[in-house]
Length: 106
Image 1 (spheres, one colour):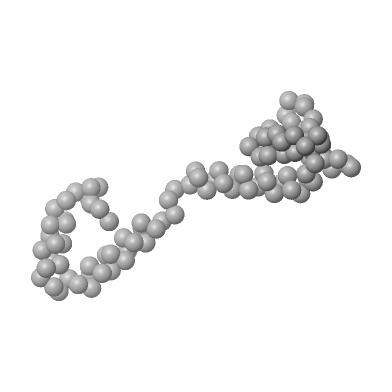
Image 2 (tube, rainbow, N blue to C red):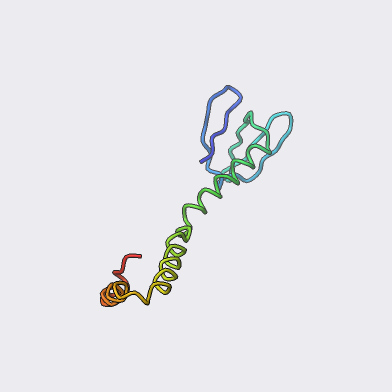
């Protein structure tokens, strides 16, 4: 939902998926899919910016993790391969390989 201000300074929240058109005559008129019209103070460019920010926020929340664990895993694997010659790391590695892959902590 995006906040918009009516001409009487009352704040209302509109679902941007319901907006059909935005007309900028002297006043900005928003038309919804059910035929309702709202006159608001914000210019059309500001409303479009709010809609784009709203959709970007939804896509960002719906996406997967940023991949930081994957990058950390690659760094740990590089560290393990660099320290394979040490006896302590070999025993730790053998113990680590006995744990099923899905329950390993990276």
